[in-house]
Length: 171
Image (cartoon, rainbow, N blue to C red; front, side, top):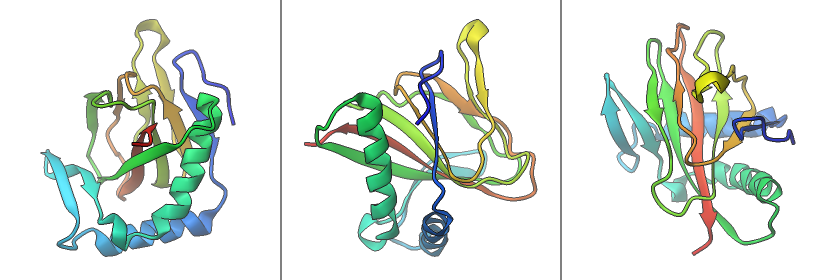
């Protein structure tokens, strides 16, 4: 695990490509399913896609990994819960500046499942300390829910797929 940088972002990597591929494949199967909820429709795409968790067992193993990272980062053994959604960014798509501080989140993050070259950096604007990360498949970034961030334009000819998440105390 990397230590958080000066913006509070820590970088990690998942080497289990079979797991990432299984999650990606199940997402593709559920993308147009009637049980999948889609929200935040901007510029011709839904920014947040919520497949039915009961039909997505592949996310269980990934969730365990992400919760373990969060416990390490937070320095706690407390029971935590993870809420997640998918971001499918086609060519030309961006995600505007936002934060994740809506509820009682302790940590936010993103895990990259499919990252073509030139598909956009994630940017954490912080005045003179703006931090840019060029993700690769398997990268996981953890950060404070109050940290503003955006995703630059996908300049590739392929889709980029990530799963974003918030982690908070188990209720």
